Image 1 (cartoon, rainbow, N blue to C red):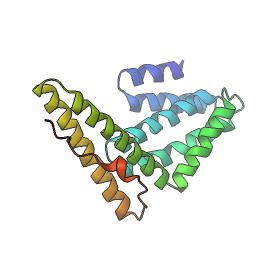
Image 2: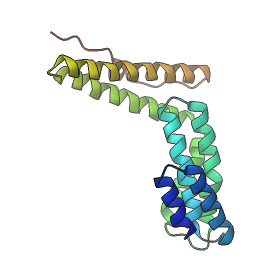
Image 3: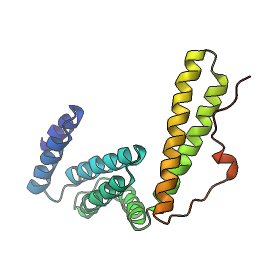
Image 4: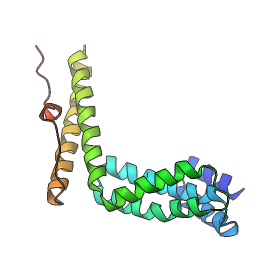
Length: 173
């Protein structure tokens, strides 16, 4: 019941109440994986949102906060998806020990997004749509610059294909 209550809280945007509900459920039955996984999943989601919003330190902090919950999930006597969650645990531990992987993947995601936005710009048929997409292109380019700056400040090598980084606003004829 507490697990479902937590899900209801999340659906209402009350993440803190959901986390409290799942913590209580985990205290009552610490050998049941679902509340632990829900706690992990909520923090992982916050980490991804922070990453995509450009709050890179917060993202890494949330991933680190999430890890113990995934560890408890996998250790439970009742574990619904042990193989899948053990793989997820290994991947998260790798990310925590080498966050450069996460930042490189985010840079790649933004680069691919930039290419898609440039294609949308070329296909835009009205001046209004061109302006809409242009704003997205500019925001994406700013986020790429911010991420590259963060990576350079933290000594993370930027690996790229020069063709992928040509994210200038296309000239329209």
